[in-house]
Image 1 (cartoon, rainbow, N blue to C red):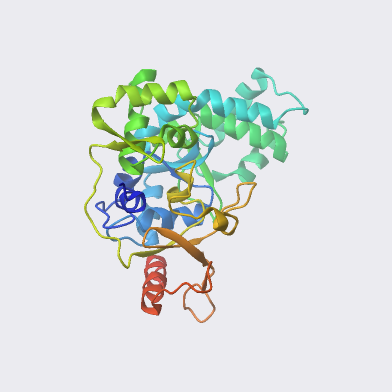
Image 2: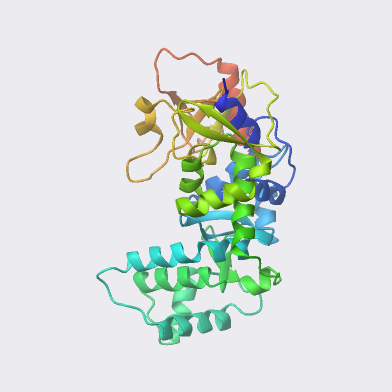
Length: 351
């Protein structure tokens, strides 16, 4: 019998974390969903042996970890050394999503995309960091359309083509930089090498997981996902459980206790977003309290491997931490443990 919650907590570094730097952690995870820019810092920080928000911000400032659209595609943090091959592997899906966004609206020609890319290379040259609004203002001066529709399509296309990437924010807003100025060029790898790397990164950090979980997380086709699993087959052990095939990576940790373990998880955390089926840690009757049908995720309380409640991410005026509510009124969690979870979050913020 597999203790799936315990194994996932250990290998996602939520229990007894092994790493000390954001770069190590993000590289281990493969990618960390970064829809919520402020909260993804906590998603990284709570998986480190010791960290504050400045630890994560410094890694973003140095360009050790970057924020861009990859995989499904949506915002993710990725390690700088991984961004090029991950963008290349994700390119078809990102372009398709960009085109789907445009359905029924004005088409953008390849010539116009090339013009916007050249403008970005000029505007951002010299290691400048600019927000989308600042770039839009420059585009208008250059005679390029800069409304929300055009800017969304221009910036996503520039990301997938390796023109721009994101890292440290500017005034609380996502800022773009030239990828060439942040990450030195590296030799290309083959598609099979990329599939193997992605599969390895996923299964070592999300083990145990199924093929369907990997397909969901990666955005790969079933055929591509199967190929990735095949390529690292010697590193994986298969287990039959609940009528499914589960894959466990050879580097996965199995020893450790999660008794009394508690964490305040941010919205869009990998413990939920990293799997298609989340019922091993979140009973189906409580799913609506953790996320909505249209993909909005809430901050949740993780206790001994199970999602048991919600917490309020806002720091109160008196300086003390977030409030919380449990899904079941009859649930009992020691107040000292809830205080511990609050203190962990507040210490991370430096409060």
